[in-house]
Amino acid sequence: MTVLAGKLAVVTGATRGIGLAIAQRLAADGARMLVTGTQLGQELESGWAYRAVDFTDLAQIQAFAAELVGLEVDILVNNAGINKIAPFTRIEPDDFLRIQQVNVTAPFLLTQAVVAGMCARKWGRIVTISSIWGRVSKAERGSYSTSKFAVDGMTAALAAEVAEYGVLANCVAPGFIDTELTRQVLGEDGIASLVKQVPARRLGKPEEVANLVAWLAGPENSYVSGQNIAIDGGFTRV
Image (cartoon, rainbow, N blue to C red; front, side):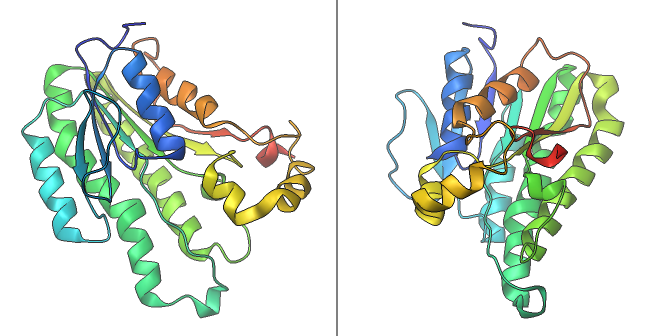
């Protein structure tokens, strides 16, 4: 497929899991890729441009945003994110602020950097990866849910301003996805217990999230904007 031929797509946090699947799908659709990770010298797909950016460092976010201002970015996928679980009264302020910087401030600054150009060219797609914990919440998710509810609000406000210029902004909220990290954290017993709570009775696949993002980021999407779309096997609806 070449539906994105000639388009420049930026995907943050694209070295593994959902981010990598999204980047691979957009590349398969013909987009030119600029992706980020945290490690220097990361080897990814041939032909992709790569930047090592630590989003816990505000100066590095600002430097990358400044680079994006000078590019004609057509698609921005804000995927990079972090989490730290803790009881609400035990959340360390530094941890809370770090999570907000990576999960909210970085998408905000990168979106600011590309959206004016998109509006001028009358076409653009911004997809921010949220979470089911940005639609519902759970104990010990105070920092993370704060950040993911925040990007939903940011996306809604942005969409209200830019949709008339052909720039569509949405969130995608994955549920429990079968990634290496998920398996490391939960283990096989934890996964077996978890999927009993999911109506689809399985974990989602990174490629399924990528398919949704690719549709939202592509030309077939001409009217969906300002939404926070869950892809969770029905988990948040029961």
